[in-house]
Image 1 (tube, each protein chain N blue to C red):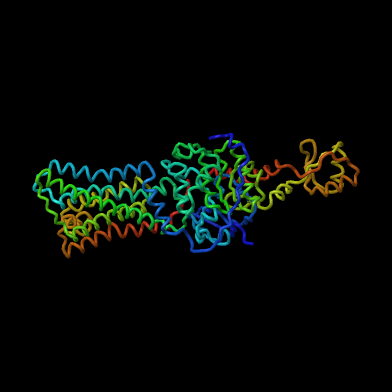
Image 2 (cartoon, rainbow over the protein chains, first blue to last red; image 1 turned 180 degrees about the vertical axis):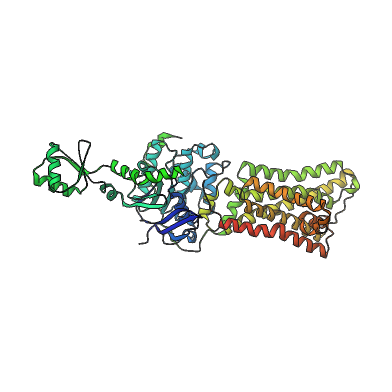
Length: 301
Length: 270
C-alpha cells in the first residue's frame, strides 16, 4: 500500500542558508503523524515543498504516491491548511467555502455541512473573515480542508488560537478521521498539542530530522520508571543487574525496558509498587533536549 | 464562537476514497467560474464594478446635457466613455493577481489548483469576459445617448463608427488589461503594481516628450503615444508597427517576465 506521504531526502537551501537538510519520513494511512519542532526549524518549508509551493533543492516529496502538483483535483484527495489567517478579509466564511466548492465541483449543501461540522453558526459563517478570531479562522480552515472529502490532511499549527475546548474538539475530529482510515500530518511547535493524538512523531530541528518513529517507542526510549517500598534495596538490585538508573520522583528512572527491571527486582526479591514506561514528561524532556539548543541558536541568529 | 458546540465530541467524519485518476488539476470551466466570482465577491471588487457600470451612463448624461448639439454623435459617446473604462478595468485584472499574494489567498488557490499557469489563464479569461461586457455596455449606452441627443437636443445623431473602430477600441482595452495583469504578476504586491501601472507610462510619456533627442522614438517606445492613432481611429501601416513595438515593450515582455515570476515565486504564508 502506498504511503499517504512519502518524503525522501528532502533539502532546501536559500543561498548559504540551509533551511531543510535531508528530511525523510512517511505518513501511513489511518495514522496521525505529529510534525514537531521549534519555530524556524524548517517545518513550514517542508510542508510547502510537500504541496508544491516551494521547489526542493534536492530530494522528493509525494502524496498518495504522486507529486502534489500531479494530483487530479488535489482538493478531492488532500485537505491542506497551511495558514488559517491567509484569507481575504472581505469575504465571508461561507463565501470562502463556496469558492472552493465551485473549484471542486461540489454541491453547495456540502458547504453548509462543513460549517456545521466545525461548529460555526450560520450567522458567523455569514460574517466577513476580517472580523474572525484566530480560533474561528482555524475552524474555517479545517472546514475548507475537509470540504472535498480528502483522505489525507496536512495541517500547519491548526491548534493555534483555539481555546482548550476547541483543542479538544480538534483532537477528537482528527483522531476520528484517522481511526476511519484517513491520514493526518499535523505540525506544531508544542509537544502537548500533539502527544495526545499522534501515533507517530517526526521531530525536526534546524532543518534536520532529530527523531522519528512511533510515539510509544519514542516514549519508552525515555526508559522505565520503577518505585519500590524500599528505595535502597531497589537501587542495589538495579546496580547488581548492571542497569543504570537515576533517582526520580520518589523512585528511579531506569535506562532499560520494564522486563529487564522486573527480572532484576524479582531476582533480588524487591517488592515493586510501580513499574511503567517513563511517563510523557520524559517525551517532553526529550523534545526539549532535542530542540532547545537549536531553538536557542535560531533565536540568537 | 459557541463553546457549547466545541465541547461536544466532534461529529464522525470519514475520509474520502475518490479514485486517483484523470488529468492533473481542475477542469478549466470551474476555475473560470471561481475567478469570475472572486472579482465580485469582496466589497472592493463590488464597488469597482459598480463604478465601472455607473461611470458610462454618468459621463454620457453629462455630455448629453452640456456638449454642443452638433458634436453629439455615436462615435463621440463611445470615445468619451472608453477612457474611464480603460482606467478602471485594468485595476480589476491587476488586483485579481496581486491579492493572491498580498492577501495570501494564493495559499488556498494553489493547493486546489497547483498549476499556476492555469490559474493565471482563468484570471485572464475572467477579466476579459468582464471587459467584453463593459465594452458592450459602452456601445449600448452610446446608442441610447445618441438617440436621446437627437430627440432632446436636436443633436448631430451621426451613427458612423465602423468595424475598424470596434477593432481599435478592442485593442486599446485589451492591451490595457493584459498590461495590468503583467504588472500584477511582475510585482505581486497590490500597491506597488498599481503605482507602477499608472505612473510608469506617464513618466515614460513625460521623459520622451521633454527630451528633444528622444522625441523621434516617442511614438515607438511610449505606449500611449503609439496608441494615439488608435484612439483617433486613423491608424496607418507605420502606426501599426509603432503599436506593435510599444506593446512588445510595455505588455508582452512584462507579461512574459511576470509569468516566470509567478511560476518561480514561492507561495508563502509569512
